[in-house]
Length: 248
Image (cartoon, rainbow, N blue to C red; front, side):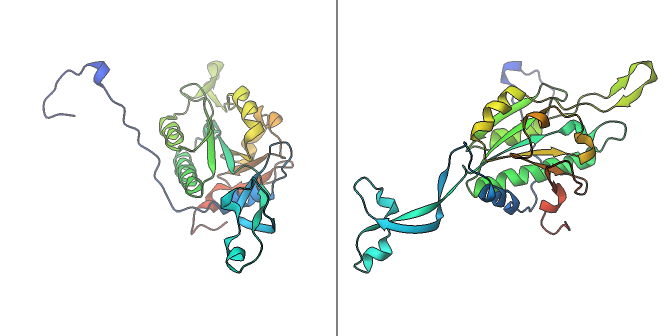
């Protein structure tokens, strides 16, 4: 921007990302699901906030695991044994197209982006690694695996735009689009993610979604903007209930 009109070299043009507005949310449901999940074949890690027991020190034990309180009481050198939990990681799938169709809900979509961005920030603050997949909209589907840096995920939310209305032939009747994700990338991610969360406008929009046949209720929870409704064996959580001060 400048006071006078001036040509700009395309190579010098920079992009500005307007992130969704952050709001006050709770991330406790995500932490609870990680804690209660079955370890299966995904591997485990130690939760250093929960000491299960202690045992005698053995050569090769890490110094940071030594129980210094017992040592200070002139007790034999011992190390802490921590509780095992799943890798602290979650992956979100955003079905933005479920907010479109015959009666689009774009205002609710913006609110959803705000809640999701706030959850990503909140989880990063408690050291939970996050990944994000966004369905195909006006541009191809986007995917980023779990990592420590959430800013690429926020940029994905800022960049997503819904696809133009899908019309049925000459009748001009607007149809609902089926969400298209990078399924190959999701299946590769499944081996190292603690829990998947599929975000849609309502459970009614989830019928015939191909990705739900690949990632079943054993590893996925559904987050819907509309009130909670049962959907098969999946746990369904109302997205609005994550906002502090909102009624569940």
